Image 1: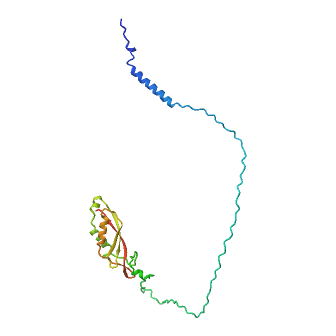
Image 2: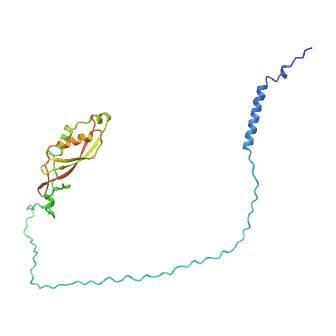
Image 3: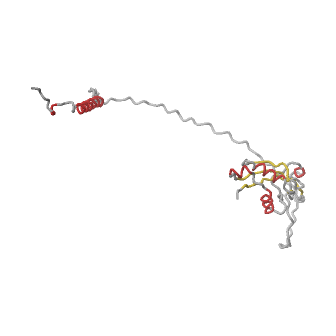
Length: 225
């Protein structure tokens, strides 16, 4: 008679389950081994708190030595010269008691210490009468707006800004020594130089009613419409 194996006793179907259970148990044991902490018992020897006296250290205090007083300043004497009452004073002040207050006062002109400074060739920075563009400031702005050609590179890149220039207005009103103080590049600096150099003659500045060379600064704005 041939023996038949019962399906309930067949462990081949449960082989996978047993394998997974074994892996889980092994992993749990490994984690437990790593996480297990052991503490060593330490014996701490606490000494007895017995009071003891500390000798007080005496710090020597330096004596306050007084400095000698400063020497007295030398005595100064003032010489008084006594003159006779009959001596006439040369500087006389004329006071007009009957002055008419409605009368126009003469124009006051500041005196310069050196006349050569006016006749010199060095440009002035501040003068009594500033140089002026023909037609005034409005005409100067109109001249710049009508003559400036926006550089192609700056227009394509959307470059905007202000170019600051410095130049000298000569005694005859001509513009010389044009320089860039601060530029924005992309052809705008060169265009500002060209327009300022081509300016018509200015009304020259004056110092003591004489035309002089004056250094002038001016901004030129580049704005895309």
